[in-house]
Image (cartoon, rainbow, N blue to C red):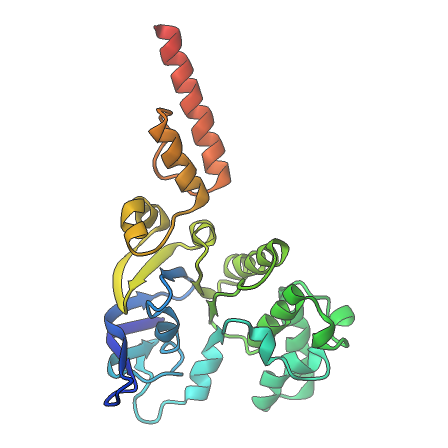
Length: 290
């Protein structure tokens, strides 16, 4: 769905403030894929994804959507932004209408859709993010909790019915309940609707649990990509890049250091429970044999 070839981006080119944010990045993201993007602050994550729907133009290289160059002459970039939805950090700051329904309807109305279609999209989008349209639709968005506001902003993007959804730190600033709710809805959108998801996050646990593939950025370069087990199998390398590993991966590492033979690729709580029980059984059998 998305292909980047030798993508480079320089801010303030030719000025004293020139900054190279991306250098020679090449990657592909398939339709329906769930990709996590990780990297230290300033590694180029947000700059990268803003090229996926043509919000930024490459300084060098190319970005393609379904094989078409996003910056070729005659490309309808409004269509591109309907196909590839982007939710920025703290999207609730972009809520502005008097009611939740009106805010979610803003994008579809700008498409020129008839009002019946607009209202159908509003109800569908609110339902997808777990907000009852009849209960939340008439309310002011500024009366909602932080997590509810975040979900209302997400509904506004979903009402455009994109094929790819990009989320830039969608849980930033939320309490644990709000984080679980947002990530739960994101996971369901991927599983049940087949939506391609690109998730930028500092939560290694979220990446391990949700992503099928992980991209690692460091100082504007793509330095690693692979499945979560492959990426998190080398904690020392990630730590050198200023990154951590999932809590259960760290737990497994500590248990191995203490002599318990747990497998090294644990990512989730369920896997940790199974691995620890199996390791204890193995240890019990070996002690019994002695």
